[in-house]
Length: 503
Picture (tube, rainbow, N blue to C red):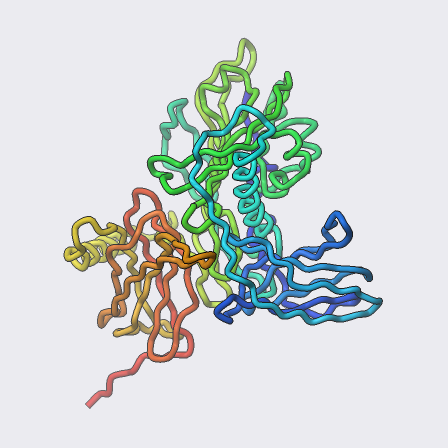
């Protein structure tokens, strides 16, 4: 049995990013407004939900843009607005009775009302129905997961960002050993989506894998599936505590409610970072496959990333499927077939919003001399970073952020200030939440290069560069496990490097 392309899992054309069209006046009843944080700064990336009736029926959802603005077009009648923020309790901030053609302007300051993800005292219960403290803990964590998944399906008003991603296919052994390095296929666009499953109700009927005599089609649970009523009614939720490399994370587990003969389901864990309440990863396996296939441990890993302006997206993913021999005879497991991909960067205009910090592989047609020169340059940069980081105190994080700062023309900028920040932990004073934000800064050298040493690994990082009164937009990145370093180039708009005078 072979495995054909996972068109329901890895579609490389779709809508990866949930940034939408600019705010505009629409026909009908419009409610728009501005949300601010307690410090009067714009509340970007907040989900705004319009509900109606005693059962809070959802009329519409949207997400605030980088200026904290939102707009909803609604039908006439009663409407109530709520704000959903990662790490905070829901906040009701407006209520109207809309007449035909009405337009309303709302403005609100969101309170600092944090949600604390407590440590898990017991692992996931075998019972599907949980009550008391255990049930309340599950409900709290699920609501935080739900916010992130909702945000990945909504649009803001800052315009469509451009993304570049790579996809690959690879044959591996049963023990997950690669037979050869994968060939990366790069794609660019504002409508690229790695995951798009079939409709949740269809999955509930046919399952996550449909076999036949020639091929098998596997499906993965995307945001729409995980948020659906059909998924909730057929899966049990629980909690688990992160250990080892996931220490400090809390996991929301999901598993089938009951065994169904001939039906392939999914079970897995959605992992949140307790320090920030943010969704980091989903891991799942296929439940109900024949024992022969289970030896390959089929399933998937999905990583989530949140940009400073609130956009959520899948930054890295991998799906593993069993490889079986073809008839005649009894099918036999011969290895795994793997499909995966990664987002390399996201830009809005000329501004970089996200980067994975890696250098894109040289194209096959690149001359050998150019490839060798690039390798030498990378080696020199690596040595320079090591020399710059030789004075990092013992016990400090070992991560390095390095790169170059340039002006709007691409000319290097010496003496620019580069700052790297990350959230390390949080504490409470009464009901007020305060973050412990770690930050490190450096100044670029004469050639515009920089290396910031002692940076936390595996944490979400925010990087900015400032030259005079001008500053770059915040760039999100993360040092991947085992990489120890990340590279990115920053452009300061509205600045031109000084040209030395010729005597």
